Length: 503
Picture 1 (cartoon, rainbow, N blue to C red):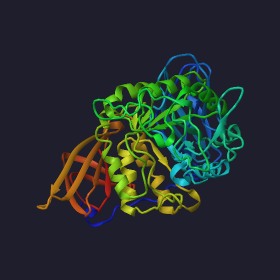
Picture 2: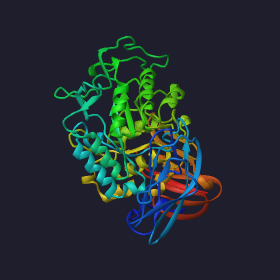
Picture 3: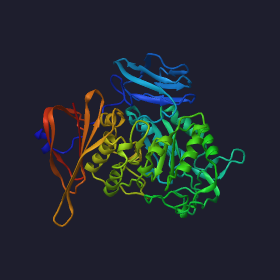
Picture 4: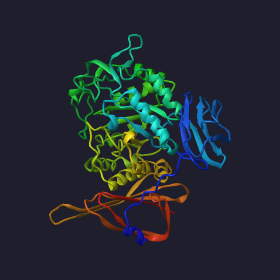
């Protein structure tokens, strides 16, 4: 393995998504609540037209669209339905084993893959801009790799509610939310929306206030109280945004989002108190749609069991900015949450700090190696991956990075939990960190495992790793087999990472 010691991390060029024989990406399992509408696309690359078929029995009421590869319908028949999904074109066929799990509480069995608007657009988003990015996800081949969600963050909300239903009305930049969602769905993608229990949402400014899912008067009953670990448990920590109202509008808003056809909700406030978590969860469950439910920003791991009963994604970190300091700080917040991750419950490292972002809000400052570090870490730690960049200005290297199907398969594997097996820190005589290297291991199907070697140091380091026995080694970033070895010798760049697959 001496070659790894002498070269930088190689990133393979992406496979054309619209050429050759079919290949089905994405997870091997999907969860559906009995009685809810099913919408699941099988992300597939290959030359069109591609036709889809199923070998095995799906539950009554669920069918596979032969032209689009989409599972649709509704069923009350609980159970696990193991089938094969077959994609065929003039070059050949590809079979993917797949299990549809129909049970209560089965949503989000694999980490979410998609795009979100915040870093790309800040609060200056509109319907046309969002749809343009959705079409890029399709035309750049990202949908064929498994990216499925187009999620709008704060900035869609208006300042008024409907008189008849009391649901929040969008602002003038979103002229027809239902039509926007239908167009997103027509691309083989899903749509997400944002809200908060705060009366005034983050992203608001003096010229424009974005409303949340509660109304005045403000609830001061738990103002500024903390739990025994120092976390806010109260309501209204962020007084600049008006606090949380006593009049909850969760049910009215959830019904409206479901009517528009949304598939995901990001619910965003400082405390993530369980009272308002559960109010919104009950409101979502009362609709006819399955929502991926994301909680942010500060979910303390001490309450993981309660959060996992209610939601699919959890954050305990600040917004991820496009700089190394933010990536480094975000990664460290995962340490306490890793033992709690499992199918349907994922720790969210927040949107990726990669790609062109809004010029008035952020400045992209990360290096090539830091981009590889970021994407490697998000995949290895089974974090939901939400790109948040402007595809109009994206470069080929970044698309290659996002399109690496082997790294994405590591992220989507739910065979086992990622574990940090080493955390090596060396200090200087002056008390500064000279060397900090983390090694993670994630079980994969067929007896394989992914190993991630992350260098958090400000200097490059040579690193040796002993497997204790001879293993078949593959470099998924370069897309090449490296042969058999019991020891790896590698160069870890400053703020860099390497990933290998071993069996």
